[in-house]
View (cartoon, rainbow, N blue to C red):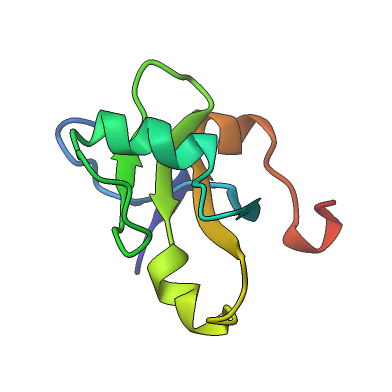
Length: 114
């Protein structure tokens, strides 16, 4: 029989139960024009010690020292095929994941989430 519990963390010794937690995800797009990159892209590039801001780069950052957020990932390369090659604009797509503590605090049924 599989035992489970909901908690924002797994005990260091592993525990005897499967630990489940709630994590919120937000996918959002930022549109820029004239070949410019978004401010997020510039900050991410600096954090990743990249010298160029090529749109084809893929970035994922683990967020520390912030109690509500854990991960920011750039998914622009994955969705690049949806952009018109003749367009003057650039669309960057990101996924932001919450921390398990945030998920536990605001846990609710999926069908009732705004």
